[in-house]
Length: 289
Image (cartoon, rainbow, N blue to C red):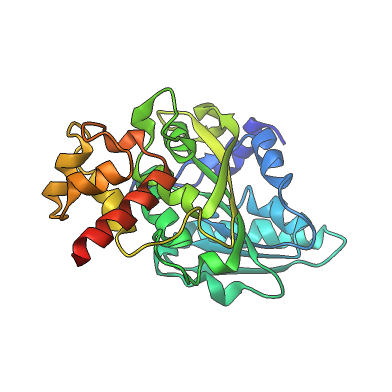
C-alpha cells in the first residue's frame, strides 16, 4: 500500500499531540517490522494507533494483543484488524487492551513462549517505557522482561544512537544511562533509519527501527552498588568520576578507582559496563571497612 492510501484513511482522524501520535504510513518500514515476526509468535503491540501495523501483524502472527490508550483510535483499530483477520487463512487470536502501557503487566499475556514486542512509541516517554519493559539493571526477576524474547521498537533516530552507544562511540555524548539500561539485558542493533516523512503527521525528526534481543542473564554481575555507581557517574557529565562519586556520598572513592586502574580524572562516559561492575564491587568493599 502506498503512503497516499494510508493518508486518505487517516485524514479524518484527529491526531492528539498530547499522546504524541504519528502514524507509520510507509509500507516498506512496516514490511521491515514484519520480517522479525513469525507465524508462531505471540505479539504485543504497544501504541497500536489506528492499526496500520496491527492489520499486517494479525495476518502473520499466532496472536496479537494491541495496547492502545486512545478511545477514538481503538474504534478504527477494531474495524481495520477484524477485516484483516477475515481475509487471513489461519485465525489469529486478536484482542485490544485499552490501557496505559506503563500500568500494564505484560506477563499476563505470555502463553507457551516469550512475547515479541512491537512498538511505535511517543518520543517523550521512550525511556520510561524501556525501563518498564526491561526493568532496572539490578532488577533480576523483572516480570515484564522475563516474559519477552525480543522488542522491535520505533524511536527517534537520536535516541536509537543512544541505545546502541558505548564508551567507544565516536560521539561520546550518545553513551549514558539509557545505553546501559538497554544493553545490560539485551543485544541492541539499529535495523533501519526511517524518514520523518514515513509518518502522518510528519514529526520534526527522523526515526529508526531498533531491535533488542533479550538475554536471560545480565551483561555483567549485578552488585549491591551497581545502579547507584552508574547513576552517580553520569550525574554531572562535566565533572570527573572521582567528584561525581564523592558527591554521591561514596566512601573510599580514590582507593576504589585506583584498585580498578581507573584514572581519577576520567569521566563516566569513558567506562564500559564491565568497568562499572568492577568499580561498584570496589566501592561496596570500601563501604564495609
